[in-house]
Length: 170
Image (cartoon, rainbow, N blue to C red; front, side, top):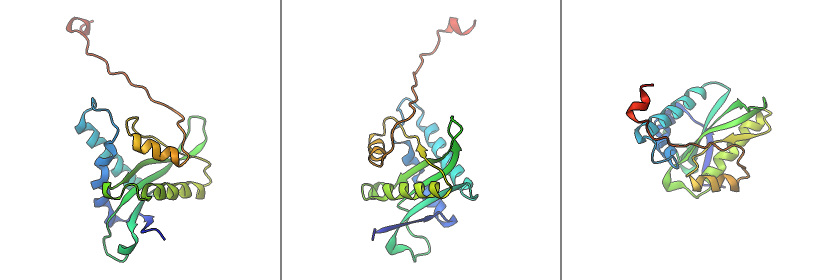
């Protein structure tokens, strides 16, 4: 038996889930605004919690098994999952966020949350589950590869220097 269990997030979990949101900035490029990164990830988490109020999405939490009887057990981590269309038109599951609190990493929490997201997608008849992560988040990328996830698309970005003052007026 694992020392934690997975269940759908409840309203009483939302505050703890939101406190984990800054962890989603791992692997983001340093040249991007840190304030904008934090604002973006907070928005992603709020959107996921809102979407989970429907049957089309879920936020699943990992909780210590020993604390399940407590009114507000500690959230060890969470995953958000929904459906979306691949550019080929195939419906697939999509993991928007996966976070494990730092003290609980490398204990199987992320793998168990991902397995729960995969089960969620399978129950909907979906044949694949995709996700995106920061290129610089080596630990997450290694973990996903270990779970059988393969890179399908890559986003490339080039930081552009500002135009000279004379060039902007054209």
